[in-house]
Amino acid sequence: MVNRRTNRGQPIDMDALRAASSVKSRALGNMGVNAKGDELGTGGEVVKKKEDRVREYYKNNPKSSTAKASLKGETPKNKITADTGSPEVKTAKTAAENVRTSTVTPADVEQRTQQIKEEMVAPIEPEIAPIPPVDEPEEFDAPDGVEPLGYKEVELPNGDIEMVPYYREEDKD
Image (cartoon, rainbow, N blue to C red; front, side):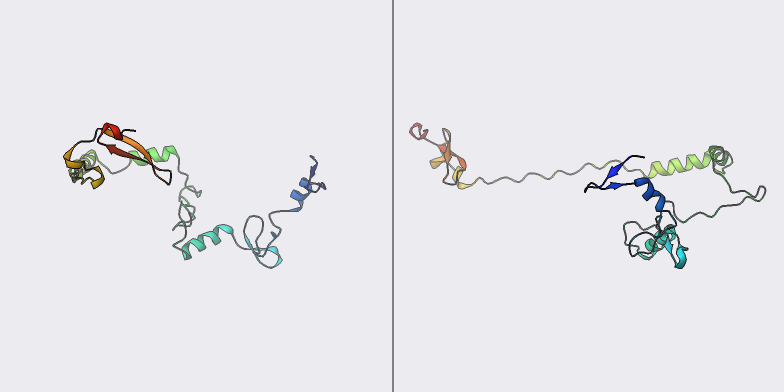
């Protein structure tokens, strides 16, 4: 046994705690369930299993996170085979036998393949809209139609830097 201590330094025996709590005992809290989540009645007897409670919840609340109670669906009832009296077991051999004895013929496969080919559509090329012309703001218009000699950086009062065109060599600096 490994000695454990709480955050206050008191020794705690985890093995004794595990042995004291069992699946049949009532869990702490106000839900009235055991450690597995089964609903308990008087005397600690199981009234409703956890799986049944979860399925019932999801059936009654279709807008919950999943519409089904289980990814696998309802709890399957064991199919008893007439000849052996034991549950039917699905294995790779039975799957291969199902394929072998299926009624699908090569003509059916060819017909379905042709049907799929007819349903297929060539990919549609997206239409690209023409780019509308952009009107430049007045600040970029040159005086008297003269092109600027270059641009210089000007710091604005708020600290931003703006590129301003200059038209004379004296304005360069």
